[in-house]
Length: 557
Image (cartoon, rainbow, N blue to C red; front, side, top):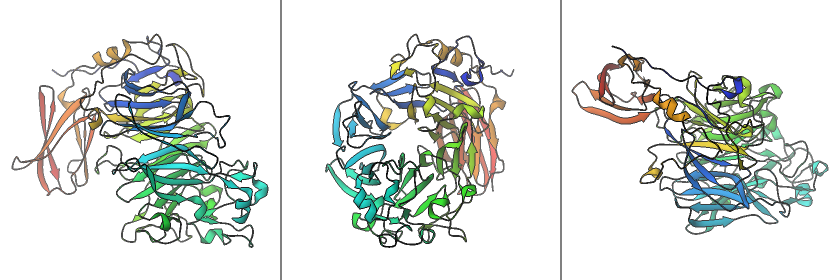
């Protein structure tokens, strides 16, 4: 006899639906059989702590800090269980350089919150801000501002009448080695400028002829010294390239990290041959006079990234570029991906006949089922999960949700803080009360969790609904055999396996002789298998769920 699957009705705060729990903060909904299993790292604004939250919304671990500190803005975990984080003082009135996203300290802490390493950059000339990336060698690539006076701006060809404070803070990127405690590589925007304003000053030329250079007179219209406000940095270890999200240019930039510091300050060198000039830029070709308003694709975007975290090559989105496109519309935001035109033979990104970087449009657009529910004018992020779902965080609302490829919400969480103070279950929060820069999910089998205590340790919110998640989980009955789906069959590229009603599936693939060719244990209701390199023929896929075992025949051609 087939068994049915029953799920409690899904709470969706923004549509006004409700269930008996009436949850307004913390966990709002959770479909355990379809959500990707893991732990969510959050570093909310207006408070000092980094939290690891399980999918039931309970604290699995917390790295506490003194109340005088605030995020600056990001934190990441590594496979050896270390926490890398930025922070700055809550009091910024005495700081020489301050704007949203400003930081001051980079720290490495162990699981028990012991400080292993610390680096400070916040003085009259330089300041850390927003984001950083950790390389496989353990070095850190970080973002910072550097001060340029009105005299330096004038010499560089800037129209100084547009400087609201008689100075500019262009971005620069540096790589620091914690073991050496020293900077080992750097790149500066100021070395790669062009301008068509003053022929008597440096960097004069035709902007449209130099898409690899940055127009010193383009950017935010109010003249604030935080000229670029780069809000995300990502590193691609395969290509050895660095990506920046530059919201006041409404575009992303990619630079060559194979350069030396001297080459990065020049226009030649590195595998690209262009030194520190931009290898690629995309989102707004107006910035280099190769487009108009109709060609703009990004609008104050955040969290620009290569899609690769915790994914293998078989994932359909692997290697593409994603952003949270904040201001695509005055009332809603989107997540977009692009399939960037990388030419590995010439080690360059290609352009069209008008010398504008390709592609012409985005590859994929994702919105909330209620289009207006994920609007956020700033902050925010996205993450593709191994099962094909996507995790999206709307930063100004502290609202995170997980979507399946069919646009079904399978997990929702609202950061339960009001101005950094724990909210009470039942409070209805408004915009900017629980600012959360990003939410990042680490798989349940993440190596950094091995041997760690991840049992529930209470909730952030007051008066939590401690029974809500247990009710959801207990309502999922055993699945029936026909809940497995394997497609396409025959397959020549990617084989997709889907299942309902269980947390994990153990998947094995055998060839016609019965020899195993692949084994894995997966969660979240979906697994992608790259069969393109398999010898054409018949294969058997065996799936184990608890005591049940199911086998399907698949043809690879």
